[in-house]
Image 1: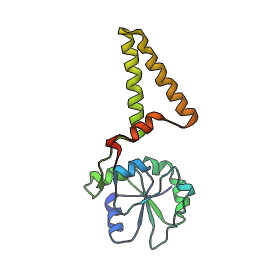
Image 2 (image 1 turned 30 degrees about the vertical axis):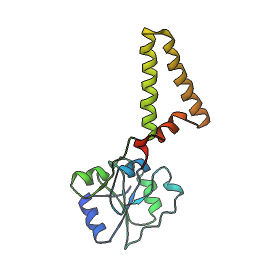
Image 3 (image 1 turned 60 degrees about the vertical axis):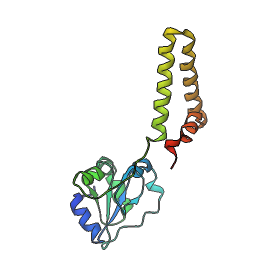
Image 4 (image 1 turned 30 degrees about the horizontal axis):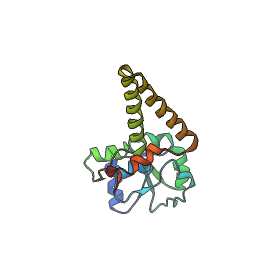
Length: 170
């Protein structure tokens, strides 16, 4: 199990170039808020990455959003570090709560969440609309069939449509 290090201690080590910070959060989380200089190594792919090993001169400090992922995957992260390593207590959330510097970017909701909101809204509209006009129930059926098709084929027309919307353009 990786030992804990506080955000303040981690910042001091990073500022003095006495450690590397490896952020194991996923890409959408990293896009929203990140600690400057942190190496991105999403937990979902970290086993396949060529993570440079930790050394006595430059140990690794692992972080996630709240500390839960680093704690649950502590043995794996320790093995991948191949040297001295810590996990940051409370993750990036604790770092930000202590007033330490973070880079924030204004990001729209992730596309997957936009799809969930859009599909759910259309299903609900179809069900409620069918109270006044019974044929509206077919809207719900169409959306359900579209979700099944997307799951089976990997093609999501609603996702492509949402990705083309102006709020999702950089």
